[in-house]
Amino acid sequence: MIVLFTDFGLSGPYTGQMKAVLARLAPGVEAIELFADAPSHDPKAAAYLLATYVDEFPNGTVFLCVVDPGVGGARAPIVVCANGRWFVGPDNGLFEIVSRRAERNPRRWDITFAPPRLSASFHGRDLFAPVAARIARGEGPCGEERSIDTVRYAHWPDDLAEIIYVDGFGNAFTGVRAMTVAPDAMIVVGHRKIHRATTFSEVQPDEAFWYENANGLVEIAVNRGRADERLGLGLGDRVAIAESVSDRDH
Image (cartoon, rainbow, N blue to C red; front, side):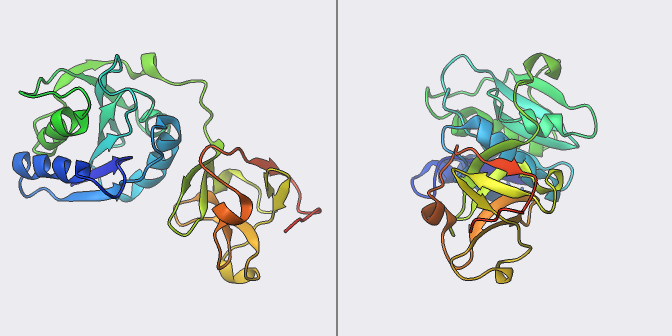
């Protein structure tokens, strides 16, 4: 299958145009829209979000990923293979966390495929979609392999203590894996300390809490409310982790 991960948004023609290319060049290969609202213009936040979701897809899955504020510029178009899954998109850090967390050595190719048409602003349709289709058909990565170690973003942390996504319910995902946080820890946003709960029903209506979401991230929520509005949270906001729940502040 081919999985789409983009910041194109839920309106406009862009996802449809890419899927048209996939249908033409890889007929019969299923295309799944995972995210059309990845962090806009933010490859770093998107890298942590992408890495959270890849494990549920089987080996051989091709991820067509476009969070590409530098489209048309100097950044290279690349293919990465990590843990048996393929990733096609821009060389701007989007695949850094996927590569770093791979159990086996990841591989990287610079795309050398030249499409008949390459617009200045829509490489998702003109370049990345055709390459993803070719890989899905079993034709290989369409490029020149190079060492992935030369392009790592070593200064990025293993877990990102920031809000990386706000879902349709107003729940705020962080880039921190819950398994790295003590069960009695507090999450601090601004001057507010938020305690942990296992489920929404453990807290009162309109009460803020954090929990391990369905994909293993620390998520900040409000029972029957919107955490983004209630707590004033937005993409890029920093969070901190306190070691004790002795001073709760709901």
